[in-house]
Image 1 (cartoon, rainbow, N blue to C red):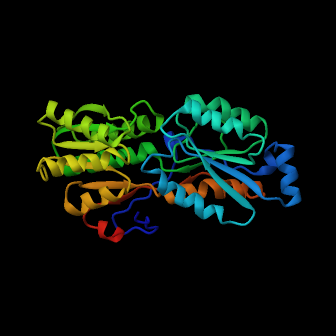
Image 2 (image 1 turned 45 degrees about the horizontal axis):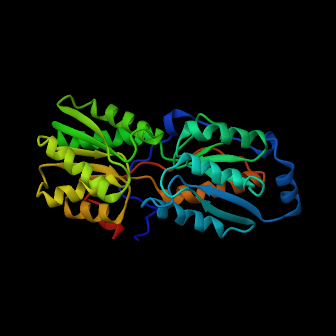
Image 3 (image 1 turned 45 degrees about the vertical axis):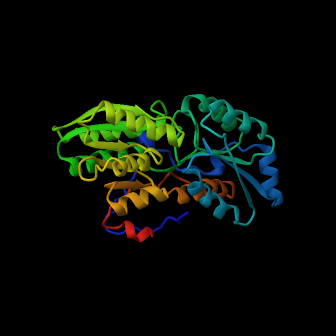
Length: 323
């Protein structure tokens, strides 16, 4: 797998903020009622156990995040352990966390469902176990801070990119899970970005599911049902390369334009070959690292705050930097 670059050329744009504008306040352990068990470990200089819960460890995007967790695990005094369901299942995510509460010194979480996970996260905070959110925020909870991309703003940037590429026409929005909060946030932003282009019509939002063949089949069926669609705007990692593959297989380069997210290998190849017009990176390796690093800093007395990992745009003009 190609390693993500940490520096971006002129096509990058970095915008401050967090999901839905739910800005946290800087927080220090002195203002937190830390669980006595964890306080005793810190006082004794013992290794701290930080768990990083990802909503679907089988997802193609997960390895990028886990690279960062592995980098953080090498820090002194920290053991970072990844947990998470295979397939997006809120109940399984909750069950895994609850079984580890007695050994958990801190939790970084990307929630499958903000509503389903918030009560557990609030209970953990009340019990003195520090919790931060990363990758996908949970602003409904008492989580301390958030490390990740502003999903609404990144959606706006995607909508703007699609508008600039397309000018006019009909667009389908694709997503792995239309009901998930991260998807709703990105879609909100995308529609706001597209609203600046009155000659572009959003035909529908397509819920593709999560399996690769299922994703491609959903896009293929949608395009058969809507042959006049000239744009596919993906809200996440995995329907982006599938849309590019549809363009390739249907000889639709230049006729159907694709804008999406993240840097899966096939997405990078499709941009280089002209089947995808643009993709937006959110620096998932950094998200995984900061998920652990923020908790380590907090537990060792440093003040922590939200971290925005930015909006980084790749097109054919700069995609060779990743090769």
